Image (cartoon, rainbow, N blue to C red):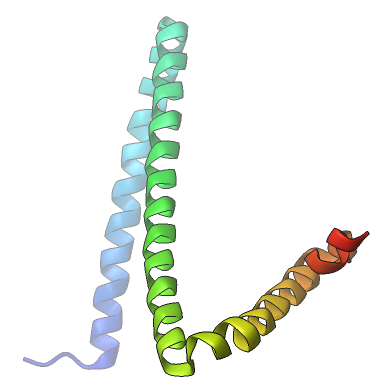
Length: 125
C-alpha cells in the first residue's frame, strides 16, 4: 500500500504530536523531582549541574574542533590541487595574495571599521 503525500504528512504530524506529548509528560514529572532534590541537596545539585554543563560544553567543543580539523584537511587538499594545477610560482605570487586580500575585505565587511587597515599597511605604520 502506497501512501500519498497527505497521508505521509498526517503520519508525520501524529509522530511529532506523540513526541511532544511524551516530552511534556516527562518534563511534568521531572520538574517537581528536580525541585525537591535541589532543595534537599543544594550543594550536590550545584555540583551535578556544573558537571553537566562542563560535560556538554566539552562535547560541543570537541565536535567543533573535529569539524575544524576536517575543514583544514579539505583546505589542504584544495591548496595542493591549486598548486599542482596552477603551478607553484603562479599560485604563490599571484593567486594566494589575491585570495588573502579578498578574505581581508570579507573580514572588514563583517567586522566593520575596527579593522580598517590591511595587514600590509598596518605593518608599515
